[in-house]
Image (cartoon, rainbow, N blue to C red; front, top):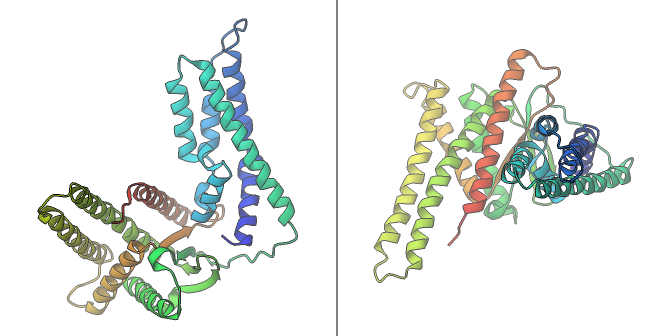
Length: 345
């Protein structure tokens, strides 16, 4: 994450967390819970405070942040206090401590303190970076920002890697663009950042729908393949004299991956109405795009999307953005799940 991106995050925290009064909602719930722990105080219902808190953290627009910004939000101690994670934590606390109100009060207070400390750090950063960072707003023209992160085994360590992944992403962009009746030039590079090397592209919503759909399907295949490989490693761990079962499982994993890639390509060929007999060049280009995208993700590469603000969108565009938002959230959920179970021999 570069300085401009960090500064943007601190401003987002100032608006969506601090000014939105998220910490205040936590404090209001804590105050009622604490009151109910005192022996001489009349017990009060806290359902209203809980609902106000849940509504507030539910409305925090986490979808506006990049993956790197979300990681930094977690490091500040804010990420787990808002969104679906925040709701799950609050409901878990109140459910598990329905009788032990004192424990519930302590845990809610701890969250409020963590949130306060995080927003305080963010505010210091925002104040310190003001007038020091030159922000260059993107001119997306109703398109969507796609960020490609060259990480893991998909890193760019030399010009050979640069040429190899550049060729792969040319095929990906060309295949998706052709499938939508466009050309590779429709996938525009609008920026790049250092660190892990992130390439920023501007892409039409229709193509983003296809790319995110392919990624979602690929992650589901990866989840299945990873589960098979993990079982193979568990069997190897038994140190049996015959490792045929483990070998067969590895073979099954490779076969499952190949079948998955083929199924994804066919599914999107059908979805986009591409004629297999009359538009063979489009079919081959799309198949190549799917294969390269799956390999990129498998090697640790990262693809992220950032949706623009919805205020001035037409109804149809707003609905499409909402569908994309749901898809992006599902992608991030599966990625977190895979990160937890990932096992490399």
